[in-house]
Each structure stands twice: as structure tokens, then as C-alpha cells.
Length: 158
Image 1 (tube, rainbow, N blue to C red):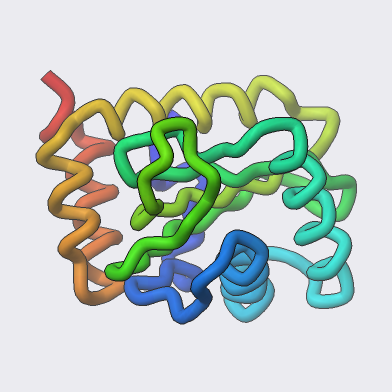
Image 2: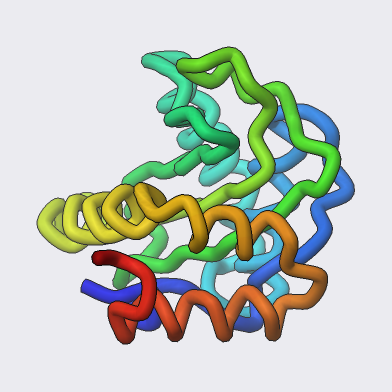
């Protein structure tokens, strides 16, 4: 699975304004609503579902990265987006560091394979320090989209 299979490029946010966990999640879900990837009347329900997942354990996986995600019956296919916070947000990450890179995923409950493949792709790509550094320095959604395309073409992972 590649980023292009699930990241909605119209929903990419190069500079998040939220400064807390729930705010970032709400902002990224709203970006998916604005892009037409999810139904607006499901926004609050999806944010709640992601926050409930966060209660099980932070999706802040360390090294300035978080992958908030949930399964939700309102979506028919896996959708996701990327957000960058230059300041960083306290996401109760495993390493205690602030998070700058967010990969948010929402998938249908009956497609767990897609969900797992997307998470696997994200974690594999994020092992590359250069990829992470370039993403954190991105100033526009187009910069982020280009980096995701380069990652899809295996230009980062050795």
C-alpha cells in the first residue's frame, strides 16, 4: 500500500493551528470533511472515536510522529491525511517528545487489512530520518504531497 492509496491530497495541512491533541485531531478530521472525503455530519463521531482510541494508548509513536486512527462505519474506504505542526504538540508520545508530524487514518470496520497495511506503510517510511526531516520542514501541502510521492516511489527507504 502506498500513501497515494489513502492520503487525500486536498486534506493535507502544512501548518496546523491547533495546540493540543484533540484540537489537532479535530482539525485533521475537518480537513477531510472540507476535502469531501468524509461526511460532515460524522465529524464529531469520528473525532470521538479517535480520542477513544487514544485513551487505549497514545498513537504518538516517538521521534515527533503520531498516527491517530480509528475504524468508523461512515466511511466506505480507507481515508487519511497528513498534518505538520512546526511548533509541535504534546501528544503524550511514547518518548515524551512533542509531535510535529501527524498521519490521521479513518477506515471502514470491515476492511482491517487496508488499515493495517496503511499503518505498516507509514511506520516503514517514517523510519527514514531524511523523510521525516523533510516532512517537518514542509511549508506547503504541495511540498508534503511531493514527499509522499517520492516515498511511494521508494526514494527514501533503503
